Amino acid sequence: MSDCALLASSRPLGSTPLTALRYRYDLPAGVTVGLSKISHRERKSVTDATGNGTTMAKCVKGRDGRCWVSAARGPLVNGHICPKRMGDYFGGMIYHTFTSLPPAPNFSIYHEIFGVTLSTTCDAWFDKYEMGFRFVSPNNYVSHIFAPDLLDEEYTVAGIYNTPTSYPLTHGFPARPPRPNAIHVPPAGLFRWHYLQCVLKKFANDDYRNLPNIHFSELPLRMEGDSDDDGTDSELEWPSKGFDLGRDVGNSLEEREEHHLATARWVSTTV
Image (cartoon, rainbow, N blue to C red; front, side):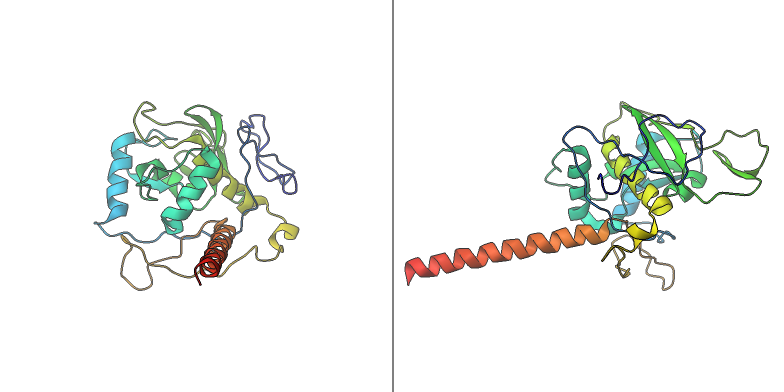
């Protein structure tokens, strides 16, 4: 990551605004990540009342009971840390890369470990990579806002309000699981991945944005749980999708080459 130096500084930022400077991203010892491809996550898809998405939302909200940031008990949303459209394979790859833990055999992008309960206000920012959670200590994070700067307004835990406001500012506000001892609480590694996407969206410079194949065509892929109404579905993407797909293609080509070599060896020894 030395060529990019993409992410947050190691010191707590508190209420200090993030600026377009050089940042360092701290990962646990022995964990490395590659370049991340840039995409846009501007809209949410509409979800039916049945399917994996609804089951996941019920599990996540049942696990937490209230918003991780504001502690509001409603209205609540299941915020997807990783977009469901990355699928099980890429979700598992992100999980393994950023946590150093192997995915379980029944691993799914719809598992509640990929969900976080948020108020509708916080989810609107979290979903668009405009708010991320900076790790402080196990089950303790600080909220950082990456949304566009506002004139005479502030991002607060209750929404956007004119300044001055009595509501606490979201940037620098603590975030934590309401029930830290519950099973399937998201690990810090997944929030690190999401935080990386926030910084990419906010601070990636022209040199980075102009790297070959750094952007990709976004194609709408319907998934179980999506609405069938034309015009309401959207292509939820993630900034590392292109490189993830490239890695998958590379692995497939390597496996195919190994298969061909194995076949050639078998033919040479049996004919």
